[in-house]
Length: 115
Length: 112
Image (cartoon, rainbow over all chains, first blue to last red; front, side, top):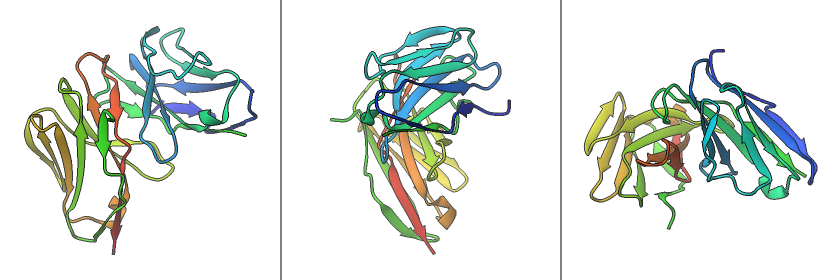
């Protein structure tokens, strides 16, 4: 595709429900980053993949958060037993190199609301 | 102390004026510095990056970096109402797999 595609664009979850957020990176991009952006804040790093390897998951806020990229392309961010504090926009970015650089692009994000 | 700090604003300037956005960072090992623009409800888009001390100009935008003072700024000349957005400063360290650490963003409003 032409850009980074995220789905769903909007998700409303009841507290305690599990959710899965999908990211389709730009074709050929080796790196994939997940960020969480709370209302009125800047994006905060969650995790990073280079191809299928998850090289950094230091930003995941708890063990309820899990991310995978099994074939080095599409990635899924899963949140178990959602809590109200998980409400945020989840942004995915992909890059053709091993770093966020000038050729990296963000997807439109998934807005998660936990009620 | 946050790793990357910005004045959240809002910063309001008249059309045609210069808007000055500032950012400080705490990690002296930081190597690359980015400015993103984010319109309400949209994703961040890269508008400027800078690696070396000094100024870098691109059209109406000038990024300034002072590593000794751990300070980076963005100047927008001849501000237009379409420049109204949140401006995010992002910093890239040398040992963090290339992830970016963002500030909280400065809201800029350019009024006609």
